[in-house]
Image (tube, rainbow, N blue to C red; front, side, top):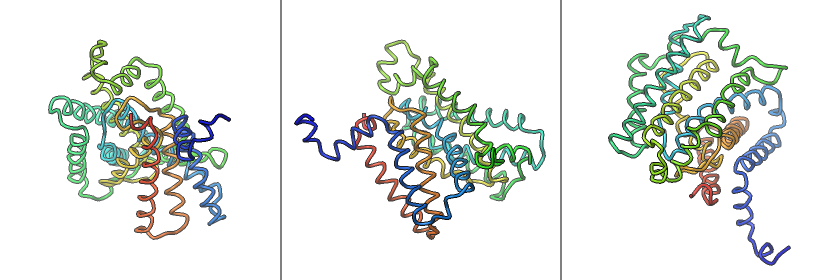
Length: 327
């Protein structure tokens, strides 16, 4: 061992470990949190718990997919939660407990997501306001429209076949929602890692000026990333409606925050140009395991909120001390 290696502090070793693989670090922390939960409440280690954790992790990872693209591109999308809630309302309202309407709902949800995503990107470019302000304003409008249409009450039910395609168990443990993941995950990986759009997105997030000088149409890429985010958020809202059976205004609004935390904990740079969807999936697992642990320990809701907030702050401090998240 060299003198330099011996002089490295524990904190420096942790930073190097996180830098090497934020996704791996998120998975390790998730396993530790799950082990602590089981140690305090051994009966919680059962097939139903594992099924619920996997299902909610997949739902959050779908919501985080578009957020990952936007953050890599140097933007920020606070309309994810509102879009999920709106898509969930659309799903339950149109299905209204009937089968055979999946493709109609899917098509309309994708159109709605693309329209709101285009509006997010267009306003960010033309008005030249911070993405956070623009997406929060549009999110507020979308939420109010949902309230006007539903009066704040649940609006219908999903079709039974659609619900079963999400909550049914394969081999008694794995939720059938995994089959949706087999489509969504490869699609997002392709867009980010293999497509021309993905390469342009990373370059734009690293240096928009250099991207423009390289001939990349920065504004078009920026609008596209918000469109993809809107569509993926609406898809996540459809899945969430299937899981919950019914929907009401703001039912998934919290995902605007949790998806952002999952993406950042997974190693995506808040300032753009660095990140991966693998990390976002690992971050979604960590957030889900933490929430599950607090629920299993039967803490009161205020205490759960406090503990969850403190742990998330500590995680963000830990990750933001690593160089990849600050660049």
